[in-house]
Image (tube, rainbow, N blue to C red):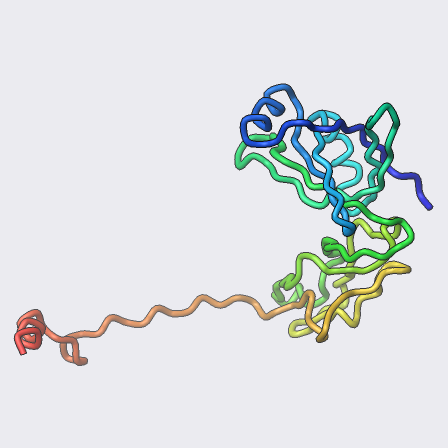
Length: 215
């Protein structure tokens, strides 16, 4: 098992908008930890510290939350499940941590990464990515950072379906029906705009429209 990324957090006593606002003003990010067993813990984490861990772990690597509780050091494995950001500032608003059991599988959304240049691109083919993420089930420590898909052999009209993708060892995709993940489509063609109808082609004159309304 690879070494977990450690993240120092602190217990958060007060909740609510005003309390969260004060935390952010003091360079903290409000956070919450929860797990399938129903445990829920309010936390806070230093903005700069979280930023470093977020860049390293992202949403696919297990982090080890470490904090003090009742004069004891607690360490809990978790995934950074969701991160709320300010709409236009580089500021984190809130974080959700999802507790995991390292011996039990979880299902997570993993980003798709395209590699290679399609063979059919030389004939004008356009790459279409139908799925930006794939749902994979595996042990937490085996979650891949991304799913690499080689598109170099694609000709125009070809697709790569979920059944065609070789997934990392220990991971399986969750789906009910086979579906296309990426494909190479023909070059886009601009549609010619329809010509405006003339009065000779049946367009009504203003006088005719007025007469119709009176009826």
